[in-house]
Amino acid sequence: MLRHLLHRLWQSALTLVLASIVVFAGVRALPGDPALAMAGEEADPETLAAVRAQLGLDDPLPVQYLKFLGHALTGDFGRSTRTGTPVSEMIGTTLPVTVELAVYAMLIAVLAGLLLGVLAAVFRGRWPEWAANGFSLFALSVPTFWLGILAVVYLSVQLGWFPASGYVSPLKDPVRGLYYLTLPAVILGLSHAAVVQRQTRSSMVGTLTADYVRTARAKGLGRGAVVFRYGLRNSLIVVTTIVGLQLGGLIAGAVVTERIFSLPGIGKLTLDSVFSRDYPVIQAVVLVITFAYIVINLLVDVLYTVIDPRVRVSGRAT
Image (cartoon, rainbow, N blue to C red; front, side, top):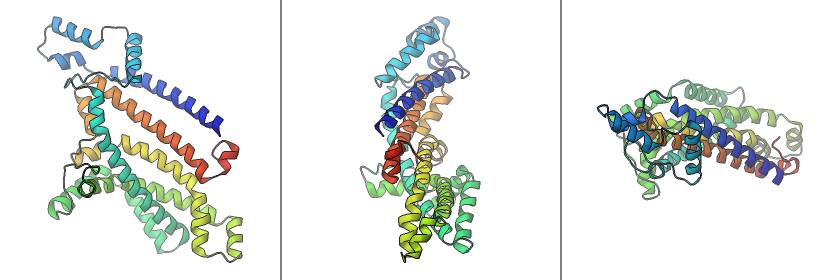
């Protein structure tokens, strides 16, 4: 087990280095000159040269990358070329908003997805399965931005059930914080709930028809115990993998939802940085999101050993 985790740590470190190279090269392939954006369209050549020297853009690309990597390892991502604010400070302000939204949305997605998946698997061929499958088809088919706009128009503006915009940290005021985050979290989590529901149903259908489950039923074990002790628990390996991948996707894909509900998260920061060609911020945001993906995948590997003890013996997920 320890050997497997060390191997995964090595893979994660290599992935992070490769991602930093891709991010560094991709950002510099964007059209436009950050020095020109920082100095202004009317800047003279001397001013542009001074700005480029200040940003280190005159150095060869390998030198720029090594400087960028060295500073990133110490948590120093430089300063924003748009505002002059330290990038680490900007990320420290916006990232918690996105994490809170993503965790809340994933909690909604997991609870709804597991409930509907279990119902669809237990009541196959009956109306609960049709209703659950109809929900997943709807949630996967309708674009998030369209649902978000409809939610703002009808649930916020016309009915006044939820605020149309704004943010209050749940850490400071849990009630108001969750009130402001509930609607965007539901909109963001719907499609992910559909994925969890379909995977749960598919996994449980196979589990509930297995020989050991039939044996448990033949010995007189109750239906609820069979469903939850054997069916659901043995299906959680697949669901855990999906949830881990979906949580990383939620953090990276909250851009549209944050824009619709005017949440001051990392998605809004990313869009503003792309529009203004703010190299330091873009690089830092993508690296942070990549790091989040890696950490989440490592946690999923550890959870495998809790859910399925066979992993501790084999050293890998089966």
